[in-house]
Image (cartoon, rainbow, N blue to C red; front, side, top):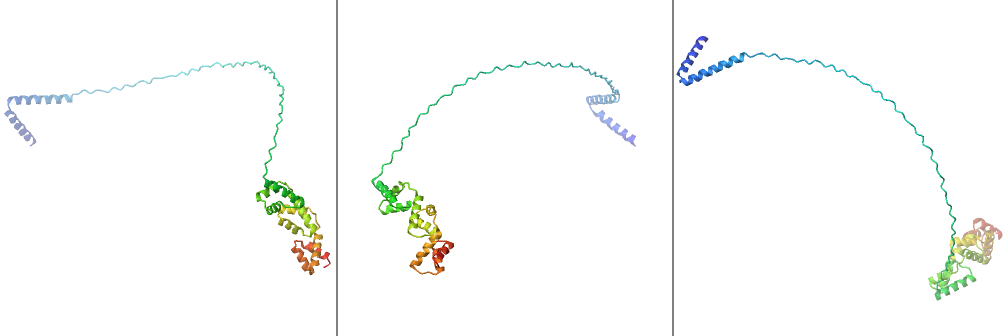
Length: 254
């Protein structure tokens, strides 16, 4: 069956080929020849053997050369010691400095006003006749109608020792009356002495305060009558210590 179909196909192709014009038939034959020639050339190719080139190993021998270095020689050079020449020093003669005397002129005394001069004279007069504290004397001059500034100037111009004035005032009080130590200090503070000045003035008397308590007890008994304890309490009120008050009452026989 296959052969018959192939034969039919070839016959059909041949009939169609015969119907072609002459130039087409020529071209068909040329094309067929070229196809057959190309098929035959493909099958007959020469086989080439691939050559393998084996490179022989190159033996490399490395030779290590040892170079000997000659030892170096270090030369030591001795340096001659240097000689230092002494330097001559010149001593200068001491200079003489003459001191020039400086004359200091005393400051000129301030010119006093008439009222200041009077205040100075009044303060001086009071201190000659009696003892005063600084503040007490200023108050006395103000009472005399000096201004406060003039009175202060007049009192400070005396440069008085107010501790000594306190001692004089304390002595005057003890001459005229009897006091306990604290009572007399309070009296001087009342006279415008500072507490320090009053304490100094009272302690400067070195008074026997037991004896002062006895005098005070005797003075109270002259003017009034007291029980023993009542008189002791009165003396304690006058700033005597309890021991001093008891001593004073015992001294008057109660």
